[in-house]
Length: 246
Image (cartoon, rainbow, N blue to C red):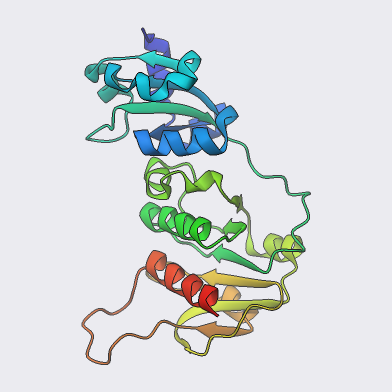
């Protein structure tokens, strides 16, 4: 059984205000919940699931509460719930930890689309990026659409929400590279601590970020292409792949 009070709490986590207040957020879907449990089981507090998924989560049965499809629809943020909803604790990474060994980090400048932010997080996890910074104007990390797009990769890297100047003070990168439509296609191996900056979907990098960049890189398409640009998630994945291949 699940109380009305608990349902009300879970519903409130759809809003950032209450996620911040309770320091909790929702994980939805079997795969995402499994991924987070495998990587960081202590962060998962409660698991609400349909009866057919009980056996799948048998090793975490003490955290499980069986519910029916009606209750699932009440607590889910999705039109088609995936059978499992979990409550996880928010654990921001420690700022005091030294990042002097990190060669490549990523900074997002006003990337508002939750799907793009989630995709970038997943790409950073795939390519071994240890630090991702969400600047002003970015979609909230714990937005349900962001979490869904990460497929659980958000627990695999350190993700900080901070202003660009704070990032510079914290990371002290030797090189800052911006993604820009008019940038170069000449990629070089990352040999010094580097910060890769990705701009917003509509505006690109803001003037203050552009001013701080030492150089710019682009992803060229065919000459007769119809698409005006690629979205931030795709651009980030391509750039990371090219650096990874050097």
